[in-house]
View 1: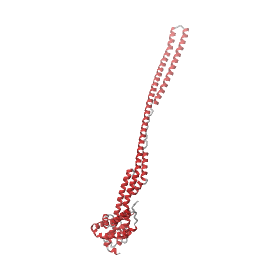
View 2 (view 1 turned 90 degrees about the vertical axis):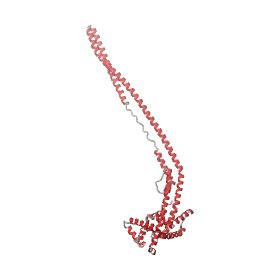
View 3 (view 1 turned 45 degrees about the vertical axis):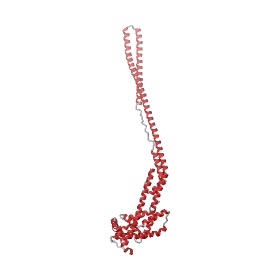
Length: 413
């Protein structure tokens, strides 16, 4: 091929191709910046509603705000907040009865002992009375039969001594019984006082629990009312936020759509211009091809591609790419003036190709058509292409091709 034998022209065309890819990569950067600005604005809109989205795609973010996503999230958060405002468990302190059983046991014991003492007292008193009566009757009979006063005195004394002992015993048990009855009365009074105190404590605890529950119910009602008012305010703001989000998305699309359209047109013109020189599938190895030709490792593109294939089969590819980029940067710094004429010629050819394709472009409105024409004019301007070539000198051709493909199929809603 005659074009391949003229290495300066071939290199100039390859640099022009790299410049075109760089120009589209610059456009891709603009689209990304527009997306970042759009995302920040949408995020601020969502934050004003208090329900941001986790997505990083601005189009999806706008759909979330303008569709049902934001409202659904607000409703779910409102429901969760209502569920979270629950009545805390008011624990009632259990006031146990620790003494009433003991008091009842004491009362029972005192009553039992008193009853036993009175029974013993009654038995002793009855025996004493029976002895006295029996001996008295015996003495009277004896007195009628014998007139010995000494015998009568002895009989009386013999009758009184056991009776007195039994009487004293009976009085002691009666005293114990009376004492136990007094203790029983004291135990009953102690039990009644304790039960009265216990009842007061339980009533006070019940009042405390009731008061706390009423306060908690009032607090819950106030919090639910405040949450509902806040939710209603957000719902009232929602239409304005949606309209603002639509405006932001439209501004974003108005910026990005001309970039994408111009990229597609420019890419098609570049394909027609440079595919005869280097197949589009090899554009990602453009750095290595230029490097092989510049360092005279290859005399033409075919040989350069063969060397690239060898590099791909080894582990030296990354180092080779770095060396190629370094060589391209050096060329642009030292000999860019020599490339400007070739870039100008190729940009003119691309511009002519675009003019030929202009009748095929379907533009929706005059404003968009004007933006697209201005964008294409910038892309086909040799000065802008040269500036883009220098700006993207440190990026590999593979990255440039990725940026081109990303912009061609960019999400324009």
